[in-house]
Length: 375
Ligand SMILES: [Zn+2]
Ligand SMILES: [Zn+2]
View 1 (cartoon, rainbow, N blue to C red):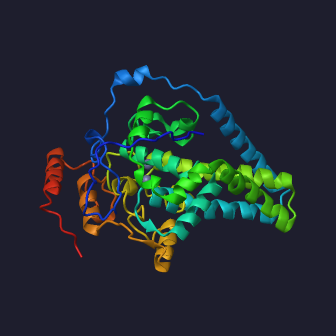
View 2 (cartoon, helix red, strand yellow):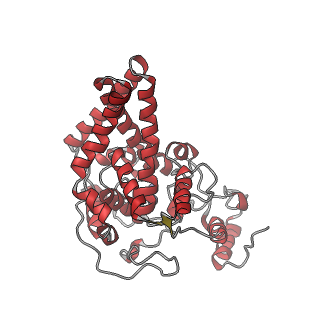
View 3 (cartoon, protein in one colour):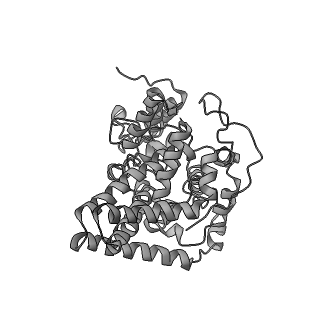
């Protein structure tokens, strides 16, 4: 598995904006040429692309091969010999632990889209540890690099390199030098002051052993007398690999197949299937345009259990300072750069619009002169 080796912070300490109430330690500005996410990002030269040839990392390749072949064997055992509750337990664990990724490593720690009191942070870090997807610090580091440098060589799972690379390939080859460079440049000082995140980072190997292997495997053995053999393959191997692949699909499928109502110039899309599998994380065109919105989608009431999860804890007072986006901001952006599939901008951006008219529409949207939302 890849491991973030980041220790340093960027030197420019200017907070990104103050009107978004990002708190006392928001992201810091990254190098200026990469901060405009309205434009396609093409910062690397063809010369550099030719120079770098990724090498296969055999230990990581063998781990992935083992996990995926073991996953198939575990599915076979589900059919032929496992108890029903063992399979049910594996599926429930996939979904409940998934909140540790979506509401935890992603929306809380990578994006700081809301704040959480320590009991919720502890719950989320333990759920995240069950998923086995490295520690929060490494996950959030790669995710921040992914957002800031999407679709460039510095994007760890650059979707322009194809489905396989974005899905799992990036984990089994040496990273592009620009990925390494940007991992070392991204400001992670906010997570370095989070005692729960740093505790999980420090004790990750034993925590992984306990929460990703020992507990999931021993619960079915202890409570309903499943065999250790069945429980190991199903509740460690298959469960772990299913969770990995659901997360992988956000990087692959949700950057390839779907609509782009908010920005047609980026690869991320709105993908219902990914949202259904990944607890509401498939509204990825919206998310890349408005990454600070805790809902990671325009419509909180459309399939998005992670938003419901955060809303529930907000009612308890454990989650607070939830960031979002105004309707006008969303519609303005859909008008300006959407592909015309946003319900309120039907027809906008159709291929048969005269080019001169389209240019003028874009210009007018930029000037914000013509658009008024009809009530
Ligand atoms: Zn994100
Ligand atoms: Zn993405």
